[in-house]
Structures are given as C-alpha cells and as structure tokens.
Image (cartoon, rainbow, N blue to C red; front, side):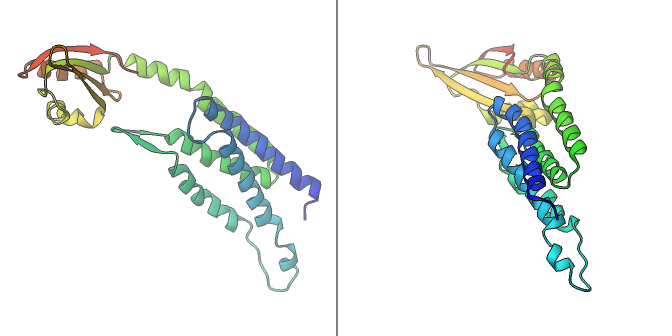
Length: 226
C-alpha cells in the first residue's frame, strides 16, 4: 500500500499536469477550461490509485485475484460522456472536438500519475501541449491558404434564401457554415453574408457565378470571413 505522502504527491502531480493543458483551453475560452481538466486528471489519478492499491485487505484472503486495470479501463470509455458535452454543432460545423480529445488525454495522464508512471505523465503532457499550442499556427496558416471562403450578397427583398443557396451549392451544401441576412430598409434590399467551412476559393467562385445569374441578385462578392 502506498504511503499517504506518495498518494498526495501523485494527486498533486495530476492536478499540475491537468492545469497545464487546461490553461491552454482556458486561454481560448473553450467550455472545458483549467478547472475541468484539473478535476478530470485528479479524478482519474484517484481512480487508478484505488484500482491498484485500494483492495489490499481483500487480496489477503485466499482465492482472490485482482485485475488493477479493470476499474481504470472504465475511465477510458466513461470520459467520452464528459467530452461529448464540450462538442457543439454551429451551423454545419462541429466545434469542440479538440477540447473533448484533450479531456480524454488528460484522463490518461491522470491514470499514469496514479500508477506512478511519472515520466510517461510528464512526457504526454508536453506532447499534448505541443499539439494544442504549437501545431495551431500551422493549422491556421493552412486554413488561410485555402483562400476566400465567404460571399457577400446584395439581393432584392426575399430574393435569396438558404434553400436556394443549398441548391446552387450542390454537393458543397454541407460546407455552408453560416448564413446571415440583414434587411436594408433604406433601399428595400437584403444584405446576406455566407461563410463556408474550408471550401477552396475556386469552388466558392463557382457558386458565386451561379448566384449572379439568379433573378433578384444585385451583386455577389467573395470575401474572407473569420
């Protein structure tokens, strides 16, 4: 059985490592921030300690066999329910998958801390932080390189609608991320902003060309929408 000092040390280690990853998510104002990641890591650590060392009295009895991985295995699947709560559908785009994955990774770090695998816990924390913070600039640069991903449309009142856009987009309709219409009362027109999710510039221009041939469409301009 572990000593009290060792138990507290492992729990604190899990909290520190979880906070490091949670801070990166907190900085970007995601639903699961520092406290959530710390709680997941500490909880997983305690579960691992209980799984591995919490049944010492039972093991002293004859014909009793313990599988320490049995309880810990439930964390791997059970953490998915918590991660699912951070996943949101915004328009046609799913958001929060990275945060859900970071929660899953933090649970694994907590299990490693509880099992006494300090080097593995530290190494995983560093790798996860590199993935979350270090790879993001390259990811954003790639998305920017795709080109203009939006359209700004001026149309006569009620001449342009989302169903019409879906028809014109064809197989690219699932890429529509946002459709915002604003009435221009001074000239009885609609100003519509359309955003696409990672659609190449040439495909956006094809949709714009089809739009320009529609009745009631006054102007169509490609634009970059964040």
